[in-house]
Structure formats: C-alpha cells, structure tokens
Length: 261
Image (spheres, rainbow, N blue to C red):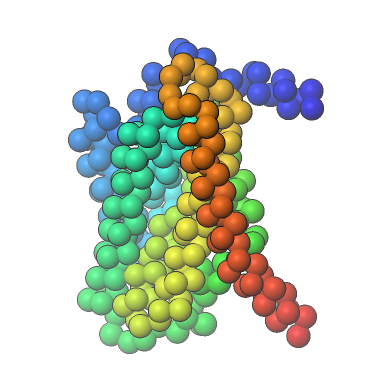
C-alpha cells in the first residue's frame, strides 16, 4: 500500500496542472472550431483506412487507423468532466462521441455499399470475425487501457504512450465492422461489433474516471458537483458495465466450450 500511496502522491494533479490539462482535453474556447475540424478530418481518414483495412483483412492497415483515430480524446473528456463535476463539459464531450459514432458507422456503410459488389465472408475475414464476438477478456483489456490512457493524459512526460493505448483498445474498427455488417446484411455481426465498442467505451469511462479521481483531479479544480451527484454518475456507468458483461460472459463460455470440443 505504501508504494501505491507514494505513486499517487507523486503524480497528483495540482491547480497549476489544470489549465494545460483542460486545454489539451476539452473542446472549448477559441480553439473549439479548429479542434473540432481536426477531429472530423482525423475521424474521416481513420474510418476510411479502417473500413478498407477490415475489408482487405489487413492487420497493419487497421492498426494504422487505430493510431490516428481521435475518439479517445472526447471519451476521456467525458469522464474527466464527470470527475470534475462539470456536467456541461461532460455532456458536450459525450455529444461529440455520439456524433462520431454515427459518422463512422454511416461512412463505413457507404464505403462498403459503393465499393464492394460481393458478400464478404465473416468467418474467413479475421478482422471481421475477431470483432463480432467480444468476451470478458476484451473488457479486462479495455479497463487497463482506459486507466493507462487517463494516466498518460494526466502527465505530459508520459503522453508519448497514448499511441500505444490507441493500439491496445479498438474504437473505430468495431464501428467500421458495424457499418460493414449492416451493408452486407450481417445484422448479428453488426450487433456483436457494437457490443464490443460499447464495452470499450464504458470501460474507458469507469477506469479512466477512477484514475483521474485517485490523482485528485476534482480537488485540484476546487469546484464541481456535490460528491453524491458524481457518485451517482459513475454508479450508472458501473451498472451499465455489469449489464454488458452478460453477453460478454455468454460469449466467453461458448468460446471455452468450443475450445474444449
């Protein structure tokens, strides 16, 4: 426990850290329009690359799309806003995530419709088959990646680790699989990929928020909601994660039984 306490004390937020942290994370102020434009461009390009990487069953291409995908920032901004007790910031960041999700699915659907003239085999394509049956293992990975991402964002000297976090947790590729699945009439594949994204999204919120809270983000801002309101927000996220574990556990059991056979 002493090691953990020392780690937290050595990396706690201070009031002096907050302005730079807010400027790097939230879409607001004079840079809002420019930041949103850059977000849209990177999201478009990452969706384009990921869609054709999945269709072409190219692992390297999909990894490239994961590195440039910008969805991690507004998700982290959502959980940081909740920890800081600023519902306006959290709500606006969530709207960016929601719009981005719809944009990725819609663009991937259109790209598949206009370029693919044959049915893609889900079983034969590893990029598709690997994202339509999420398991509890995916939840564990997402929780660890969310914690790593929050820690990297909180410290400028370890921010270089963020590309590795982006590679560890898939955000845009599962959404592209949703669009591809809908375009191909593979509704079960699309729903499975959507469960994977929701799992990753909720895991980032809960583990990232926990790291921000442990590092004293709220106390450093010296403002925000009452602790009860903040606890209710994260309680709802935790309940949502518990709900998601039902299909994840079912898939894990089926995967284990198939391996046994």
